[in-house]
Length: 544
Image (cartoon, rainbow, N blue to C red; front, side, top):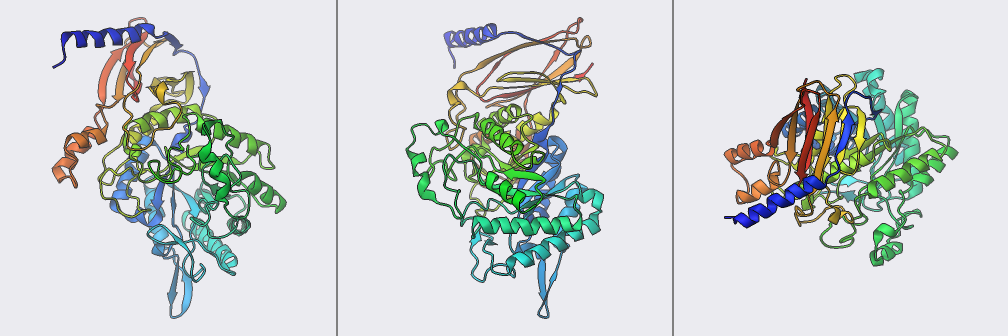
């Protein structure tokens, strides 16, 4: 039991935090600066065939409804398990039944495909093609692959237009391949051969209708060296990165972006959008061990990278190209324990709010742990990318996106821990507050350390110009509310949980700390409270 002195100390400390806060006043009667919910544009998933499962579709419906995602991107659209090419009586023919079923169900859920054109069907790949993932995606082209690929993409695009109508497909995006710079992991060929693949893909898509949107190069995370400058990856030049005293002091840049844009200009090829993956890491596929251990960049690295990308595109021959960041998370490891934990939510909220106006989308990788790049996992919480785990348990990352989706479309105020918005239609006020502790600025949270400690922040602000008596709901995600991994640990880490345990955990994962606050008779709302480390707080006007 806590002593009286300890309780008094905590009370005095919290009171001091609130008193130290600089009170901010926001006028709800004024209009703010318009902004886009680019965080709700797109979300990632593992591979196309997983989308034919009931659990995957149920979770997609959940995140679309509560997080607002408009598009889903995934690998393996042309993989053998989707049977895009079938052989009957010695003759090859196209088969779209599996893709149709997936796209039909997605569209029924009000979600569009962000089409990743990958990987090679076996009949199109080299005889001894290298593969990636346990499901063996083919990544090695052969001499006649590019002409056959052109025909496949053209036939597929035409089929989509015939089935769904040109007005629908004009809203889609066609992205060529996935992380081809990672030789020989995702692409067993040269940079020039990828550029040829892009050329054939773009020509094929545009041959159906020149208005359809195509882009690339879908390259991996930013780097501070020249390892990707040549035709094939040269990892030897990156050794200096591992010896650097401070990797955040290095100059980081996007991969293949400038070469890709120059190539497309010279070849007179379209670039409707540029895509890349700004993970805040270098080689940290496993942030705990192996090559790249500890090479996690600081919290503001995403904003710096996107500023570089936006500036580079604006200075290119394609200044009007959209920017779509088709993968992003705290790390590119599907076994990073931090993906299941609370700090990821504060990082998501902070990063997205910091980068307003810099991109058209930032696709969280992924919405679900029904995801099998490394095969099935031994634990229900294994550091999977998903914001919802295999059993349907919502992680803190899910609530981060749900809360971001609640914001209005006009920015009234922003600082390093508070964002206040207004809905231009309803005129209601919604704010998000978060605490990304200053002690952790130098590295994005990753690994097995929970990192739930850190300094608290005092939140204090006033909103005036409200209807008298307006009601606000205050919803808090913190280490004791909505933090499903901690709750599972307290249950003894059941593996696998019983059906009743899953029901109990689902209820807990959906339960935030809820409070209600009202504006006074003069239409003034004042809020003062402590922001505990890594907490995220949604303050939402619910009526007048």
